[in-house]
Length: 166
Image 1 (cartoon, rainbow, N blue to C red):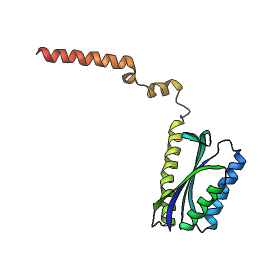
Image 2: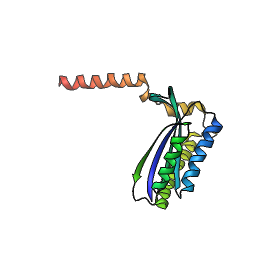
Image 3: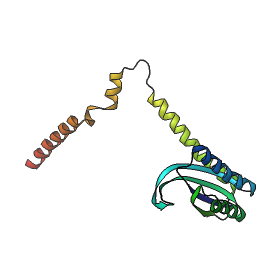
Image 4: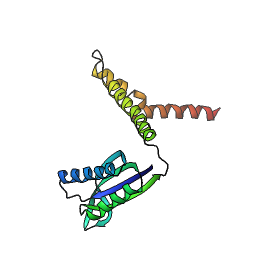
């Protein structure tokens, strides 16, 4: 199987329900043509570099999938026919892709991100016995405040003056 990436720019004035049905149809085409959808990224409405069909904005969606060339042929045929699609582009990412290996890599990449988020929320919680003033003093020590920095700079300047006189 080959790995492809298709970016579709959809009419931004399209209601959410119609946009969802369009993206569902794209997923169906991939499945019907014996392809496997790996990842779908909805980027949302973005400003276009140039106007397409007199519209300065478009809704971007990225589909990462594996399949043979017939998947791409059918997907591009659908995008040409459907007026809701303003532009599309399909790129070959890997001519020799292994679907199971790709899914395992994505799962492994997402697992550390989830654990990092949970650790961040755990450290953000404060023990009950610790007061808010103690938190503030821990968060901004005097050495990091502008007054503390200027005092340190003045002291270091005095030390430099002493070393130059010797």
